[in-house]
Structures are given as structure tokens and as C-alpha cells.
Length: 155
Image (cartoon, rainbow, N blue to C red; front, side):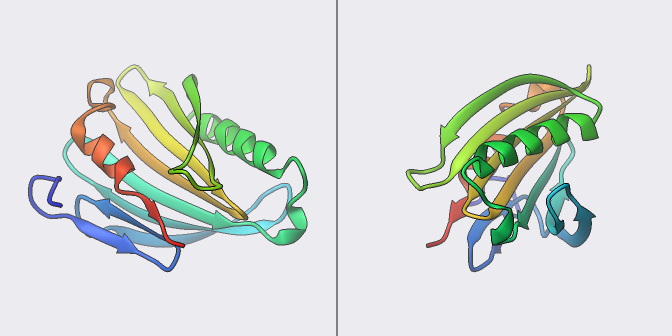
């Protein structure tokens, strides 16, 4: 599966796998949310026209209630738009891969030359964010589609 015209790197954890165009840089950031402090686990790579990232965070059981999914996905959407000082162009709801995961795909205009395409996938207490930052003409190209399609949850 060599879809990045050369080298690709597979990230594989006990919970998920995804392919990137090269070995990613990884980091962990601690942030405070309204509900509780969390850790963001971040993997990033880039090529000439794209910046790819997979970010995940786990939320403690005590913050989960009947409206958790909707509140979490709304908050992640609003935070993504706010963090890049962008404009939400579209939001599409989807069920992820026949699983119990809820998802949203967002297209956010950062400026006239930059678009953020992101998929938010909520599985139990874990929020995954698959992100691509690119120029508008590359937002739907094959590399972006392959990146999103390569994300797999493990049982």
C-alpha cells in the first residue's frame, strides 16, 4: 500500500492504525478543558502540499453523560474553527465504518489559500481527530482520501 509516491509510515497502536507519508513526529500536550485536564497525543507529517496529523485524547468516565457525544463533537468543531481563526465551510455527520463510533467531517477555511479538512471520530471516551491542512485545490486529492481511508480502529 504505497500510496504516497514513495515512502509511507504506518502508525499502529493497540486501538488504531493509520498511514502517513513519512515517519511522523510525535508529541503529547497537556491541556485543560472545561470538564477536566486531558492529554493530546499528536502525530504529524507533511509533504510539499499537505500537513497531516492524527490527534487523540481520552476523557475520564466521570465526564460522560447522556449528551456527551454531541457536546464533545460540537466542542471539538467549535474549538477547531476558533483555534485557526477560521470559517466553517461544511460539516457532514457520519457513522464510522459500521462501528459504534460517531463522526463528523469538517471543512474549515483558514484563509483564502489554506483549508483544514478534519474528521472527528468519537469512540467511547476517546476522540480522534484526523487533520489535513492544504491549499483548496488539494483538499480532495488522492493523498488526502487515502490518509482518511487508511484509519482503522482495532477491536
